[in-house]
Image (cartoon, rainbow, N blue to C red):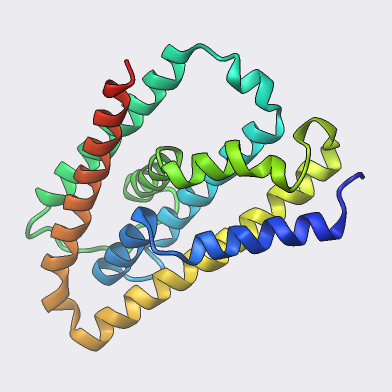
Length: 210
């Protein structure tokens, strides 16, 4: 294992700060938790963490290989994520009057929430900038051993999951203070509008680079 405790601590400290700064994923978590509760938002958090794990794993696999990947593949992936987010936004906006249910972990609703969280992270410019730009400031991916990668990914996932869970708890608490009935419609509109906005912004940014 070549990873030093100071390197890991510095990287996790930056990730903690970035995770605490409110972003699109955090807004989605809060809106979802306000509408359906923190437990229901767990699938969304899981998808967000999975997206970070994939990005971090790809960065540790080597920047050279990533840079050599076909540009069309990156654009196609971004457009797919944009379409997924926009579709999820439309479905959320059209869910007027549908009663909120606590979805089981393996239910389609939970899988959809997880997919939304994953796509949001994959298309998040801040996450992409950190993993593929700032990560080498803390360690050299080329020198990382499999054990180093396992420790880094596990620690990063734990930090991100903890912060996002706090956002979910805050959303549920806010709904309890205001009243679920009064916040359900507002949260649905906010979630749907945010998903559509993120999808549209990602698509426009991708198309502008072609």
